[in-house]
Amino acid sequence: MKKILVTGGAGYIGIHICLLLLEQEFDVVIVDSLTNSNENSIKRLFDYKNKNFDIKNSTLQFYKGDIRDLEFLRKVFLESRNSGNSIDNVIHLAGLKSVSQSIDFPGKYWEVNVYGTLQILKVMEEFECKNFVFSSSATIYSQMQESPLNENAQISPINPYGKTKATVEEILKDFSKNKKQFWNFISLRYFNPVGAHPSGMFGEDPIGIPNNLFPYICQVGSARRDTLSIFGNNWPTNDGTCIRDYIHIMDLADGHIAALNFLNGEIDKVGSFIAVNLGTGVGTSVLELVEIFEKVNKLKINTHFTSRRLGDKAVVYANPEMAHKVLNWTSKRNIEDMCRDAWNWQLKNPSGY
Ligand code: NAD
Ligand code: UFG
Image 1 (cartoon, rainbow, N blue to C red):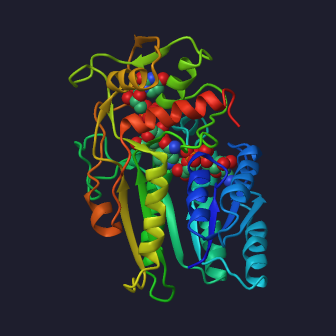
Image 2: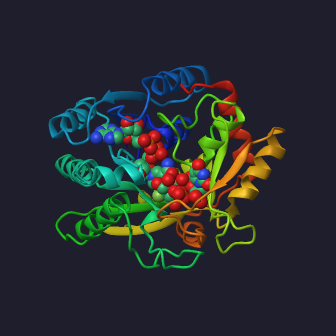
């Protein structure tokens, strides 16, 4: 195992995974259309590599293009093969991720997230690359399932975004049963990835008004937004606000290295599919999070309560035991680390990359 293709590598999660891969001396090839990211993240990655990993034996390449474009993907794989260093693993993050947008534009979501994934699998097959790590989501679990969520909990997504993720998992399962073509698949079901690289050079940079809690809090902290709307104060939790399993982005990135080690490990998997939660197993409410953020970063976040957001659930957190057992991975960073690193990124990059 040496050369890893990271689709969506310019995005929030991808760039942090690439940092770790380079640090650990993998060769990295990034494919990204930059539809939801900024070329400056890539420029910073090259700079960071040159400054910090210059003694490391790893290479970095970036291709701007769309995962739905078969010829483009073929070119990426072919150039690697011709260089004598073929791509042997794929971490597939490229995709669209907004729940609300997926309700307004379902066709776009099915096309990019499902058809796009099929195109990658097609080219991988042509180039005999069989190890595939997929970015799935805790959002695929049924709303009726109680936390902690195990991997065998019922899958029943309620929005097009979640349905595309669950469908890709079904596709991977079917492919893994093909006796003629041996695939090794791991689907990582992320809970709530937050925070930033401790350097403050990489972090989450949403386009427009943030949908998610963490970037919104950061923007209120830096006075870019006036106040945080807390969606509901009458949920059946101790303080009436929703509970989520926030996971530090660097722990999440570590989970991908663990997944690669698993796929390329000693045990011959001969056609396998496994789904693994990446979460901490710790639930934190919105009010608790705001309080910790204020305390750690010594600032005030203005908040007010509004009505519940459609599709939200009171409590969502992982049972992370499978990741520990199968991948030998556990999260190391706590909610204080997440708040500190997210704020450090915000302070150093008030308008993002
Ligand atoms: P992101 O939007 O920051 O990154 C996705 C990247 O994919 C972007 O850089 C975007 O430009 C690229 N992309 C989109 N469509 C493309 C296409 N057709 N061809 C090539 N590149 C394309 O999102 P992220 O938060 O880094 O998420 C990465 C993956 O993890 C996504 O698949 C997402 O669904 C999944 N995920 C994210 C979360 C989360 O909370 N961030 C939770 C669960 C799962
Ligand atoms: N919230 C607020 N105010 C905001 C934003 C969020 O109160 O401005 C609350 C939400 O109601 C929720 C919590 O903060 O209770 C977390 O919300 P996020 O939008 O940050 O995250 P979600 O748990 O709703 O969903 C996220 C991603 C999904 C992914 C899921 C995985 O957005 O794509 O985590 O569990 F699938």
